Length: 159
Image 1 (cartoon, rainbow, N blue to C red):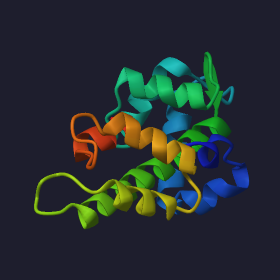
Image 2 (image 1 turned 45 degrees about the vertical axis):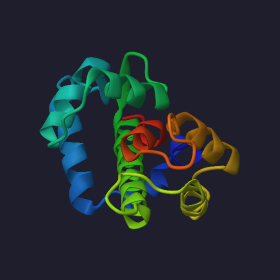
Image 3 (image 1 turned 60 degrees about the vertical axis):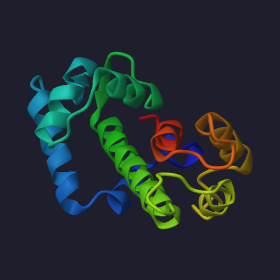
């Protein structure tokens, strides 16, 4: 996804997370900040996410902490930034899935490359034209004119 989620400012968090999401994220942090030092060890992220109703793999946690540049422990601000980033990325994934469904023809799980280019270009500057072409090259394997949805989604959102 790129630059839009890499540096979420504290002032943006409240615009991204709902009041309920913000409250739940803060509560999860407080539960694991047992010493009251304002920091939580990185090894607790999986359980914190489970407490928020999210099931995340070790690989997903690694990506989250890498994007947040976290090595051992993190602050409440970093935790909220991770939650905001995750929400933005989830919303982006949903947009991609919806767009793919809109353009997918005849139930074949394929869309035209031109439809992909046009649709991804409309995503509020989240993806550069060069990245769109890279995604297309990676997702179009055996049939050069129409990427399969599963291949396309893996490349776009890393799943």
